[in-house]
Amino acid sequence: MLAKQLWHRIARPRESGDLNELRRGTIWEISAIVFVLAWGMLIAVYEHPQYSVVPFVLGLGSLLAIGWRERNLRLALVCLIGALIAAIAFQKLAFPASAAQYFFPIVIVIASVLVSSANVFVVAGIACAVLLVVARAQNVDWLDEPVIAPVLLTLLTGCAAWIGSRQMRLALDWMRNSYTRANTLLSQLRNERASLASTLKMLEDAYIRIEKMNYALIEAQSAAEAARRAKAEFAANVSHELRTPINIITGFSETMANAPETYIGATWSPELSADIEQIHQSSRHLAALIDDVLDLSALDARKLGLTVAATDIRAVLDDAVSVVNNLYRAKKLELEIDVAPDLPAVQIDAVRIRQVLINLLTNASRFTPQGGVTLSARLIDDTIRVAVADTGIGIAPEDISKVFEDFG
Image 1 (spheres, rainbow, N blue to C red):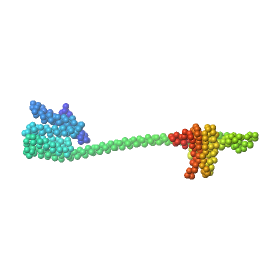
Image 2 (image 1 turned 90 degrees about the vertical axis):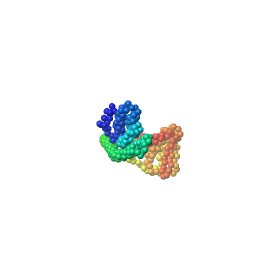
Image 3 (image 1 turned 180 degrees about the vertical axis):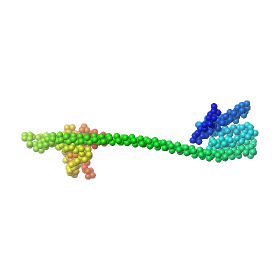
Image 4 (image 1 turned 120 degrees about the horizontal axis):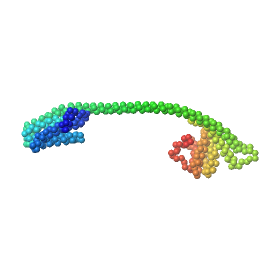
């Protein structure tokens, strides 16, 4: 089985762009050869167990190298090269007369294809040191020919292996780096192509959505124009229908308030006169609001006309209070007016300001169960500030942004 795998690897070598992967494959091949050699030697010395140390060391080292080559490449290299050096040393110790020391250069050649260029000298140095230790153990002088010759041969082999393998390793490194750069560029190109395709798809989808939105905008514009015309027509019709009864109420209330003698034999009590005056003021205010309905289309265009004139702000406040006075009286709420003296006349639309004040005072009474409301006016930095303060629940912080929305 081992021979079959070895033949398969030799016949179809494993290709890899990574130098460590190439080393792992080489470790497998060399270890397999060493294991087969050790197995043959073990069979040859079967009848002499005392000579089985060398094949045992070779076999064990090759098996450990094969087992560790995937998990720890450095440890696998140590096991294989160490087993080769140790086997030669044991062979020389067991057979002092043998020429086993001349096999160390073979180890250097094998190491040159497994380790880096600089580490070839490390392996050569270890081999020379082991050779010297074995010579010392056998009481051989280091300067004798059986020692100095293999040491020099080992060192020369290391230099030759370093020179021979350096260019090959540089070429392999260059090829690996080129392959890595090519893969990186190819990956970037694929990513950019995918990004471009995605962008084109998004542009197509956006173009389709824009077309749909254009059609929807055209339809919405037509619907809005139709709604605007319908609203303007409705406002005109409503204001026309309401103006006649309001004018009648305004006319009669004005006559009853300003010329009570018209009604022969009728007398108005002070309370009734005050109520009639409030009816008259409210009808005038309502008539002014009805006139504003005609300006709804202008309001949508934010071009609502204003009638601005110099106005006494105290008079506007009094008019607003007179409209809501009975409402406060019915709810038993206090309504106080706190106006600073000598306020100057201001350029305002009295109808609009009175409308705002009536709305504020009405809302204040609605949300004030007890206590009262204070209407104040102060001159602050050339500006008159009018404020409505009540003792009610107030406005929630999250609802303040809705104050100026329609019907907010």
